[in-house]
Length: 408
Ligand code: HEC
Ligand code: HEC
Image (cartoon, rainbow, N blue to C red; front, side):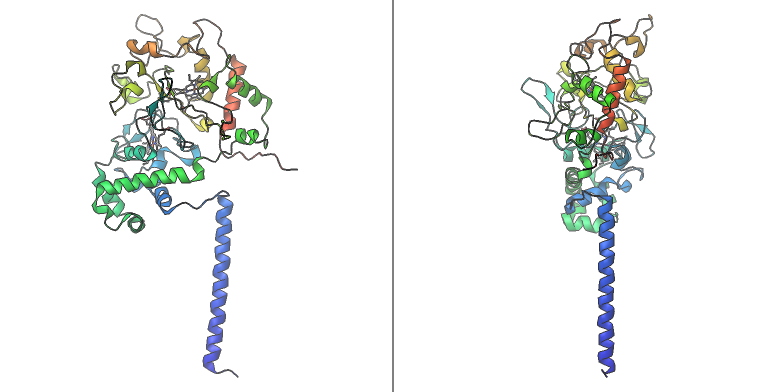
């Protein structure tokens, strides 16, 4: 007979190992659950994990109701989740911005802003390329008066000091980090950049088209025709700016060549700023960095966006003028053949072509290249059913395709 004490010890040891077993089982269950949710989950660095918390933290805004994820929702391919031409922000969420919120997926290969070998503007973040890195970009929204609207980095440090993860932030960046607002801001933007660069959710490359390129999915007849028209230099010629082929380095296409162009998207009366007839969003030449003010040939140019996940959008182009993908595609081919469909009439009854540009910059509009190069009254390079086919193809670019062919 063991003594009471040894009996007690044995029971205790047994209980402990049962507890250990249960906790092990729980861990397994949790891990399985997690891995079911995120099949490609990779371990994010501590900095990137903090970035993920920052990305979703509404307390870092003057309104207390807006985070990066408000305007870059995962459900919308990390773009704006609504049809507004620009979101409402500021302390009372009643101030409208000036441009649509782009998808922020597939940006990891965006080069800094530069002029390329042909002298064309290329690279950079935002519709006008004014930020050179994702970290530089991330400083913008916090202090933009029509977005998160904090007055200064000190306010950001103050709010962060009260966040549930403040101690974790200090452990990563230093105990005194909140005493130095500029250092806090640098850490915040670095963390947001790391999150966007490390988390594969920002570039899963698992659309129907990606799987098609890998031979793991098929395209319908309409999608196949749309792809051919998208690439055909005499028809859509879309791939001239939105490349669709596997790249020379073997990587999947990004659907942007990072350049800029003037499409002359028509003026959007829904944008509050456009109530002033003298206000024009001139894009590249008027960007807030002020470095291109003397380059009038760059007025009216905006960045070529990737078309991945574009079918998830509800407002297209920098000013959200078109609400359906079909209208956006039709605009390309009918802009110059049927301008009355897109542009308002001036007081003399004439169609005011390229109405969102002052007269002196209308010469910057791209009219030479296919698919624009067609005169008024001419035949658009794509007819109605061809437009439908291109739209059908663009719908293959959404991430998370679930219809992959089963391995035989
Ligand atoms: C109120 C809505 C709003 C909020 C909040 C917001 N953004 Fe944006 N974001 C936009 C808009 C609009 C643009 C395009 C602005 C422009 O081009 O002038 C943009 C552009 C970007 C871009 C550049 C995309 C490209 O193609 O170059 C990135 C990256 C980005 N945002 C990340 C963030 C991060 C990180 C946060 C949080 C710190 C954030 N955004 C908060 C609306 C928002
Ligand atoms: C010469 C370069 C060029 C060609 C060719 C071109 N695009 Fe674009 N595309 C752009 C630029 C620049 C923008 C952004 C313009 C803006 O917002 O003012 C854009 C934007 C778009 C958008 C809106 C994306 C968004 O996020 O709102 C769609 C859709 C689109 N293009 C589809 C096409 C299709 C389809 C074709 C072929 C019929 C095509 N593009 C041909 C340069 C081009």
